[in-house]
Length: 487
Image (cartoon, rainbow, N blue to C red; front, side, top):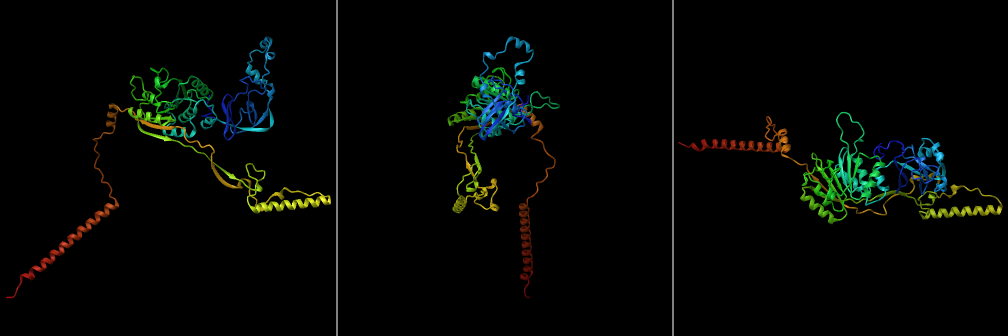
């Protein structure tokens, strides 16, 4: 079954996870099912109750993603009425034949009736939206952190990622999207394609069981393998801790209280003689997630002892900026979020004059026994030709979020080069021999500066030779004159 996290399609399918978007910071995850799997007693089948109304899943299934779904009227009084008196008799069960309870319930579902108010938007799940709506079991790795982590780990389609400390599964969903390169059941033609995979390890048994259930519900079986194990002692091999197979990972993320205790298993040649969990043909990239500097210091110390290189620490601080229009004025009455208050003295005086004129007309009409025709345009404090559109009213302002998320954890990154043997060195020398001599090496082209320098030196040499020639000529002219005398 395709996962809605990776290939959501165009419409919401039954038995798939969907997100019920209520407002900007409130989203409810649910599994779409027409029948009431929890047996809550609703005649409409399975129903999700929110602050904006009740929504039977029969109104959500097969709807396009992003649709606005109107709330329905649900008989909440029928809940809990399934007592002993409602049990079916043996004769009815025999007469029902081969129909299952789910099929019979789906055929007897009551058609939902639209309510007068309330709605939500049906959204397909993404790792970002799942991070904001998932049930928190441990500290969650948020989007600003895991997006930077996956970038530094070089996570790409077809790769394998090791995750130690699955927790709530936030990083798991982001990592499987980064390495996704097709489903395991797909038949590949021609060259065999390497499928991406996430190998997740969790020490807490209940959390590991819950993560496995979520992976199955989200259609990620075969792409994510969750293992209940203490990686400090058992390591990162799949299956049996001693004789299991290697995941051949090139990216490792450790969200552990003491990551330095697990680094002894992340080497090219483990001391126990077991197979290394790292890919022998590529460079390994590592990231640790630690909230305290003491943890960072001990981790870096062990990294250096085990040969990890390019060690660096990063702290990610995320801040959201809200951009909106600030609408102030008497002409903003009826606009949501606007401040109905005079924005200037002139506007306040104009409003007072308008109210005085209206009161004067009402008094005159009352004395004459007539009725005054009232127009809403009279409340406008601005001429009709100068009125602005609602979307363009006010001034554009920006504000930071009220609760600034500062420190989450320190991220320590390191690189372990691939193991280089004598055979690899020999192959490299055969392919690129160092004693290879090329044919006549071509002279490098001279730069403009070098040409000017050579021309200047040549000119000076010519001037020098010319001066020496003149001196010799002058000396030759002087010699006959000095040798002659009177007889």
